[in-house]
Length: 531
Image (tube, rainbow, N blue to C red; front, side, top):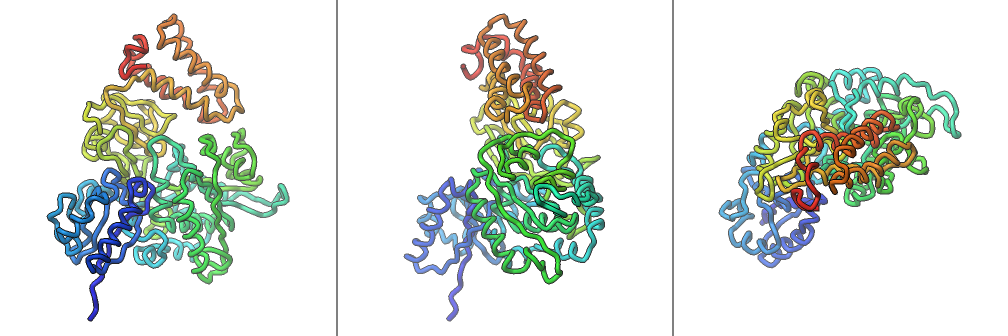
């Protein structure tokens, strides 16, 4: 007699692991064995509903039923209440996973497979349209691939929002004929996976939940511009992603999706992972290339652009994880299918990442145009502390703090630029009304002190002086003169810095002064949140 085996999905994502997913999997396996239940535990990626982790799912004839957040203390009661039989009486039961409002209302293109598959299963990936884009690309010439990317309207998801198709066209047209550093006729694809912005985790989710999508996107990029070597520059703080990527690359090579003869086409693309060295500045593309070459991560002057003189002096595509992860959908479904989402010049979707003092933190992939308030209230559910929200920083530590009066702004590049803000990588960090915004302004300067590569004076010295000036303001030392000095210093950093590290550090400082002036007009000890 055949015994029915119930599939249970328990994430291997970093967030789930931090919340005890490994121990939970062991406890469930042991309890099932003790009770004589036949189960198969599949370690999937995360759905991105991080406030529910560990989120476990049980496969039933009606679909997957979700339970969360599950702790080891809940295991006995789950079995007692027949969760393996599809019973939904347990207090942690969330119903059908796909019907959870947080997930159901999203428009997932890039994250369509996240949490559904075993991240390193080639079979799972192909069953859900994986490698369809690559198969189409193998039948196209380079220019046709680039034209499809142009038609999609995809812009760089790392923060700069530069049109991806134009960057690819530049590399395609570049002639690497000059020998530099012993390299001849070589182009490179480099993935910037040095995700260091506060409140961001979308890159990590791609690599931990759907690594073959990134591999496929980079391979298509190589076919588009004539590059046969790719590197993923991964931040060293992502050990789980590192392990999963290496396993996925090995399996892709063994199955003919990477290597010297991709799917029998005679075309070649090789891919390796390289670890960063815990330097935020290496998220800047030229500092990344310096680091990848084995040098200290310091910013290069531009021009020349990396698309023309990049890695080892050769033409190089440097794209963010999310940019490259969007490519398989674009090639499989056509550029117009992607461009049908979004608004104006902000086309497609962006995975917004809710973090900070938020009740329901997680990833929300939606078309450009949703408002910040919708994300904060409908998805985020307000603050974790239960206090009123006061300020929100969108786009990472180099972007502006937004007061409530700006939360109805559509989330697209042009609308945010119009209010002096930026979308960056889509990270959203929430602060409640206990925050001291003068302290946050100080942190912005202090962050630059710690992370500057030191190459240019406005960034290296300006940030150090910025901390000192803000300290004097907070201590009520000649406040009016120091406020004027802070403004002059910010202008100097914006106009004179070599890259965005120094050039954008003033944005959060100036926004804090503009929108929360009361926090700069009282001694630090009496400010909200204390000194």
